[in-house]
Image 1 (cartoon, helix red, strand yellow):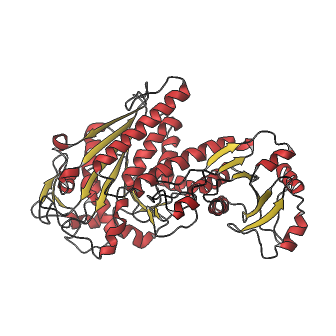
Image 2 (cartoon, rainbow, N blue to C red):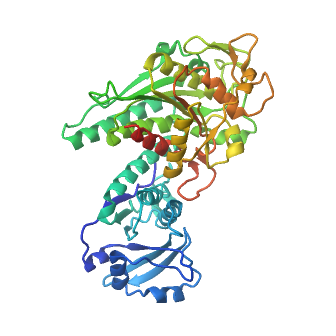
Amino acid sequence: MHLPQPQFHNFGELADNDLEKFDVISIPVWCGVEAPQIPQDALIDRVLKFCELDRDELWKLYPEFSGKAKEIVRVPVRGRKKLIRVLLVGVGGGSREDFRKAGASLGRNILGSGYRLLNAVNFTSHDQAIAHIMALSLSQYGWNLKSKDSADKKKRAKGSTSIWFAPEFSEQVARASLLANAVWQTRDLIHTPSNIKTPEWMGDEAKRLVRQANSAHGAHSGQGAQGANSASLSITVKKGSQLKEFGGLNAVGNSSPEAGPRLIEVRYAPVGSEKWPHVVLVGKGITFDTGGISLKRPYDLMIPMKSDMAGAAAVLTATVAMVQVQPKVRVTALLMCAQNMISGTAQRPSDVITQYGGTTVEIINTDAEGRLVLADGLALADRKLEPDYLVDVATLTGSASIGLGKQYAAMYSRNRSLAATLATIGERIGDRVWHMPLVDDYATSLTSTIADLNHDASAKKFQGGSITAALFLENFVGDRNWVHLDIAGPARSDSDTGEVIKGGTGFGTRLLIEWLASLS
């Protein structure tokens, strides 16, 4: 399971002897013109005096330290009762991204330590604080199924780190903790191996998260614990004959009949919310993707496919977080969950299926399965749910990462204002998206001689696979305010880098939460 999650706190008035209670004290250092600069601040001045550290003398002891973002120097200090570790943490020029990098570096430095850390940082903006605190948390994420006797597990099982900030940052600590916790939940879902993580398991986990959120909110509001379906959050899981109209979900999911497809619907709709704007989020939930009969090649491409449900995980945890955020927005999350396996019941190239709503689709490549399950969800939202905004999130195409790499998700929408809003929020919160064109000339690649559409744009050689996938999905959204987020690039990482960990990153969770909050 995951490593202990760091806990954030705000301290009140600190006496000098209270500083002795901390194992680590971090001090921000800015890049100076001639030498690094420690800010003039009452708390920092007290820490320096308590530790008997002189600003000018420090740079003589550590001449290589420049104060650039991410740089850290350990200064051992003998307290009255124990050794206290003072960390000089470079924050560069103090930009939001510098503070994000500094937070991630600090988080990795104390990973798994169980330390009590006093972070004597002095933020000058809300965004600085949110970026820094989130990075501190996310950089400490880890997940494994090692046995209790594992030497590595024993080494890293010292308990959660507790991190303390000045009381004036209590609002930022609370918000960043909420966002980081949601990303941890998303990462937990993604990292769970697919022999455990079936569509049925996804339904059970969604019920658990809904029940947990309702219970916590009920206890906080004094209403007592609530069940899996309360006035705020409710959940329905459809399977079997309940899915007979969902041709895409069945075509993909029936390749694994013992763990058949599920349509998981999670709703945030507090009492009195009937007239609030309604947002529908549709998430691709392929719990493992072999490519089906059109087998993925080379084999190595299949190994990370337990993360092919990252879109569904993000829309689930973002919706569950609404209980805490409490925006004046109704949210419905549709998790389109299936396994894409090889079996006697798997769909074949040349099959024709009928998507929800009646559109027929010719199957060309069974490894282009994500758009089939999304099409069902989008059509359901358009025809039955009356959304004011319709957003789908999916690890959909490798093409998206060819042009944008691992740092940005490909975003498609005809609504330029909505796209600009999401791009701005993404830059601020750390889930970056880039507005891509829906090239109408490419739509002819979706024609079929035997069905309404073919699904992989093979009729013409336009390339632009991420664009043609988005054009396919657009056929199912009607006239809605629609956004398609192809997160195939940033949803997975091949290494531990900054606040991102190797494996599933939880991309999209923060973006959705912050955007939904902005609609109030």
